[in-house]
Amino acid sequence: MDESSGAAPRRRGERPEDCEAGPSGFSLAGFLPYRLSVATNRISRAFARRYSQRFGLSIAEWRVLAVLGSFAPLSSNEICERTAMDKAKVSRAVALLTGKGLVDRAAHPSDQRLLRLSLSAQGQATFEAVVPIAQRLEAELLEGLSAEERALLERCLDHLDGAVRRLETGGT
Amino acid sequence: MDESSGAAPRRRGERPEDCEAGPSGFSLAGFLPYRLSVATNRISRAFARRYSQRFGLSIAEWRVLAVLGSFAPLSSNEICERTAMDKAKVSRAVALLTGKGLVDRAAHPSDQRLLRLSLSAQGQATFEAVVPIAQRLEAELLEGLSAEERALLERCLDHLDGAVRRLETGGT
DNA sequence: GAAGTATCGTTTCAGGTGAAACGAAGGTCA
DNA sequence: TGACCTTCGTTTCACCTGAAACGATACTTC
Image (cartoon, helix red, strand yellow):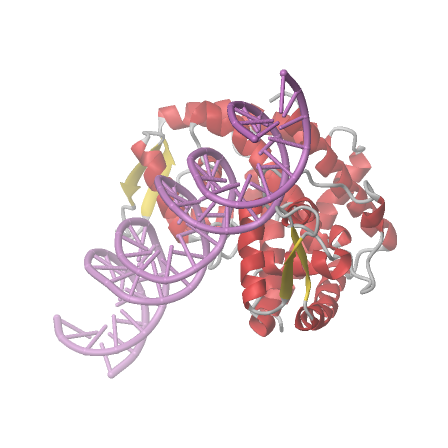
């Protein structure tokens, strides 16, 4: 998470000056990475507020819960891949979840380095309780967008994801 | 910034299991807040890598530079509004930028509580050097999307922004 | 099987984070 | 004026973060 709190942020065009770009021709308010960042952080906070209150879960914990709810058993490393979190973050989230009794950890039978993580009964129950909240929030965010628009948004996200991945691996 | 590093994250549908949602009917890989977060963090990192190397700027510093480049002079509070960062973060970024000689700070003539922040000549030069990098990155991200798709992406971001703002202010 | 290398998950470390406390300045009202 | 409240920007505090170091396990090569 990145962004802010008490600010009273503006939408593009909400104030006259925001439409203008200044002498440089650059406008932060219209800059895609900036806009994505603001929207994303605001959404993450809104979502976290809903389930962290009720269930005492951080975003990282919820993500681990979510992938384990769908794909258990997984190793720590597999959770990294599926959640796009780094291994330290996953390790901490898993430690918290096992501490709360939501996740069971066992050793992999043939490779002692790997963990075999899965949801406990309580973890499964928590997961199933959070899912509808997640889905309702998503529905509320998308409300007002047509099916075509939603599909295109999906496509745009795929596109951005692919583009930035290419930038990362490719040259500067 | 939030997400991870060494992971080898997957796009939706890249692996067969990712298309399936598990017994719960929930798939993290298709969950909008999650997808936004991953794409955003990856983009932020890619962008930061480009200018932080060359100019020694953090994302927060770049944002302050960007708004001052377009709208100086501004108070600290106005920067908060325009960048959607909280006041502590802005305060720290401004302190760093003034330390580097990129930002000039003066007292507001009629209200001593307010700062009057603007770019120094060096700050202006840095800003003008970073702008093309920012614009090129944005262009690379959007490459392959038609004008209609870009416009719709804009609209979707506006929509999401408005929706989550309503959630924040409205009920849970 | 011994030596060297790779991978797994944890922990450490230095630095970044927002919420809240804070002092300073301004405003309000009697 | 003086008491009180608000607003501005800074600083403190407890926490979170990723990069790197780490010990443990597994694999590879000879």
